[in-house]
Every structure is written in C-alpha cells, then in structure tokens.
Image: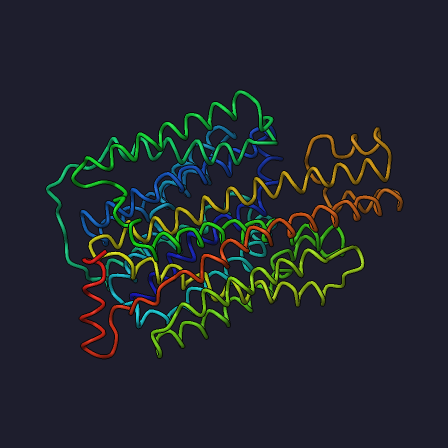
Length: 502
C-alpha cells in the first residue's frame, strides 16, 4: 500500500509536464504572451532543480513523511493556482510554486523507498517505477490533448488535484516513519548559494543560443555568477555543521562515478525525447496527436529491461554488469539513431529506439540504487536528491546543447538546398516548423525541410553517441560493493562498514 501511494505521487510529478506541454498552444491562444511562453516551462524547471537538494536535506533533518506531505501540498496549491491564472505573468509565477513542490516529490519517493527497502531487495520494485515512467510519457500527451479539447486547458492543472488528494490520504494513512527533530540550524547560506548556482546554470542552458548569443554579455555574466556562487557554496559547505549538500558523500568513488553517469544519462535521454518525435512527425509524417505512442518501442524496452535487471539484482546482488551493458547499449542505440535519414522506416527507427530504451532500462534505476547504497542512512535524502539533481541538470544541458547543434544544421541545410534568402527566411528565428504547416508548403520546400531535419537529427545523435562513450567508460570503474540488506549476516556486516570506511 505504501509503494502504491508512492507510485501515485511519482506519476503526479512525471505526468504534469507531459500534459501541460500538449496544452501550451491553447494556453497561449487564450492568455496571449507568446514571447513569455518559454518561461512557463523555465519557471517550473528552475524551481524544481533549485529546491531538489533542499527537500532531500530537510527530509534527513526533520523526518521524511512530514516534508514529503508538505511538498505534495505545495505542488497541489501551485496546480490549483495555475489553473486559475488570468494572464501569462500569473501562470509563470504559479508554475514556479508548482515546481517548488515538484522538487520534493521525486526526491521524497526515492528517499522513502531507500528508507523502507534495503538496496538488495529494491530491484524487484524497479519495474513498477519504470512502468510509471512509461505510463506518464505515453499517456501524458494523450490525456493532455483530450482534456484540452473537451474540458479546457485549465483541467491540465486541475487533474493533479484528485490524484494528489489520493496520494495525500494514502501517504498519511499507511506511511509510518520515525519522526525526527534536528537541533542544528538549517544551512541557509549554503542553500542560497546552491540555488543561485543552479539557477544560473539552468538559465544558461535555457537562454543560450535562443534568447541570447552564447558569447553575449548576459550568458557570460550568468556563467561567472554560477561559478562564483558554486565556489562560495563549496567553501560554506566545508565549514557548517549540517551542510545542505554534504561534500563528503562525493569522496565515495562509486557515488561520484554514478553521479557522472546519471548526468550523462539525463543528457542523452532528454535529448532523445526532444528530437525523436520531431523526426518522426516531420520526416516520417506521423501524427502529432499520437506523439507519445511514437516512443512506445523505447519505453516498453526500458520497462521490460528495468524489471529484468531489478529481479536479477535482487537475486544475485550483482549490479555492475548492468551499468556496463546499459552504457554500451545506450551508445549503440544512439549510434544507430544517427544513421536515420529521410528513407528510414518507422519499423527501423522503432528497433533503434528499442536498443536505446534497453540501455536506459539497465541504467535508470540501477544508478539510483548505487547512489543510495553508497551513502549512510542518515544521508539518504541528500544522496537521492543529488542523483536526481545531476540527472536533471544533465537533461537541461542536453536539450540546450543538442538543440543548438540541431538548429545550426537545419539552418545550414536549408540554405544549401533553397539558397540563402529562402533558407534564412524559414529558419532565421531558430525555431522548427509546425508539421501541420509543413503539409501546406510546395513539395520542393517540404523535401528540403525533411532533409534538413534528418541532417540535424543525425548530428544530434552522433554527438550524443560521443557523449555516451564517457558514461560507458566510467561504468567500468565502478566497484561491486555489496548491497545493504543481503541474505547472509557476513554480507550485511561488511556492507554496514562500507559507508563508515568511506
């Protein structure tokens, strides 16, 4: 029952962005403010990323249940206010409130699972988590489209309320964890500096190459601000008694390696999720309405493989092989996807996506498992939040950097095929063309744009392949530290000594 309640909360966190993304054109049509459209997403992402490590630390200090329930309430308040927004400014502000709560949802789920289930036993539940992710990614766009068409865009936010109410009631009723009350002062200075540093990084990846030039004063200024804030954060964390993100957890080789791998997984995963539907809609002529279904081969492979890896890990206690194999499959999947062109069939691209999804299935939950097994129980919250944070930041970097590569390739290909004037006219804004609008264009322009998108996608996945090689190489250096909660006393004793030794 506890796990069911946690899965509902996890679905709540993952479903929101998928549903809202489908409703955005209608929202802009009613509220106006097209120039502020990106901030509806950016405000949510910023608040989520900045609050993630703070929620994890608060759970460690004051008890997991109360902090988790608070994050759900804040998320639901933000959802209700977003649904009642009367203009774009209000919507952006309320989305920030919603993101603040969302930062505690995923971290709370992972940390509570870490408290309740020993790492050795946790693998058998990995399939449930992967299944929730698949349901969110496939069902989100479909639910969002249905709600927007029949009930209005405001229900894209209101739908969170009944789900959240169920989660609140179930967590309150069935989750029983010991209460804590830390006498140590909260590390306000560290939290503020970390928030500034993360905000600067996310804004660089959001604005760089779109709102501002990569070498503009604004982006360089944000870079300097981010570096100074993070350096100040490191200095503060070394002195305070209860740091918001204890630096000693990074002395553990496995934790540092798996954090790097998680960052790279986020980088290539969010990049893939962004550009695969675009390729299939623009080049292969698939329907935008069913965009979630286009990713089905990847998501099903991820779910099945995650379930398999979890079962084997529970039975054998071995996990390094899955990280190595997962890194290899992700690299192979990205390399295969880089071969796609205008003649690639949906079946072929589906097979390539399945290879990538299998790699993700081996890595997604296993990396979190290793991160939690590498920290002491008292640091379970910050261990979980750090792994989540670096994966989120990796995703932001992935979308921004791969997006810049994609845009440049599309623009240059259009100029080559149509000439400078026509090519720049169609792609000068740096945005891609709506597949519906593309259907109304002359065949020559449609063909040129399809080739441009195929070329851009080729370069995106080629660079993704090179990035993923780093993660594959890092996986080989992981050490097979016994998982806590093993079947025999000697294993359990050895495992308990590991964090202290580190």
